[in-house]
Length: 328
Ligand SMILES: [Mn+2]
Picture 1: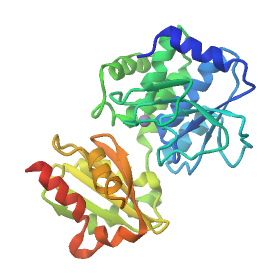
Picture 2: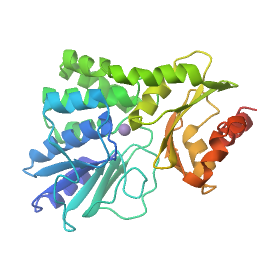
Picture 3: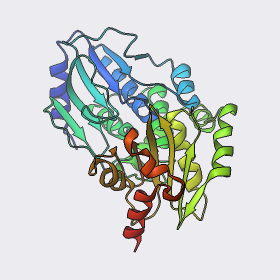
Picture 4: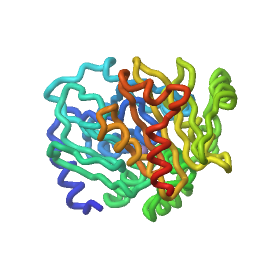
């Protein structure tokens, strides 16, 4: 938890800058964008001008609805000219992680709720891995600094908090509940619920159909390889959906991407930490990269190791094997 003095000292250090870049993680989600937006509005109270950027794609309809309806000024990093002299705040992600592109400029701060170990030093570092969403951290800054929150900012943060915690059913702490109560009272709930309800496009239903037909189940672990092309965030959506099936408590959803394999994990099993599963099975063996929370994680398998995971008789074996060991 940061003190008011620490947050103010950081803001004071930003003051002389012509602009501050706020960078969401690549393929940003609702939490990343709403947190970046809320931080940008907060800094505008101190007359600090900001530019919100991201790399990758915004590939969820609910997220483009959120951005469009609230008119959140956000730019793909290729749309704006970033300079090596720019100062960057990483939000809901951290430089050095696979999902944060190293864009021109100097990363001077990180505000995140993932389990990360930054390797460089920052002006300001606020990492709270027990928090359900970065949105809660930003809400706390508003509270700490006594800044009145607009309905738009509250609504955006509530969307971020709800999406990251699956409507307060996973990975949240007391602070998230406090934020939820406040944001709920302050938001335009009709708007928030409209964003949260409309999560799919008709064309995406074919991914569900494919999952139904090609699902593989092994001792409570459901896994499926989706056909390309598939929006990256679709993996998580489908993972959440499959986890809602009573018989499954761990889900692995994958799709081939750039010759590698993109993975999304979900778990509701106490003895299966999927963040650890990704790290141990991919990073520690140099077969790829991965990480995340105990209940929700992601990863990439390098091209040369794909067959080890996707062979018919070997379907996701390295994961299934480890999960069985942990369950035993
Ligand atoms: Mn998040």
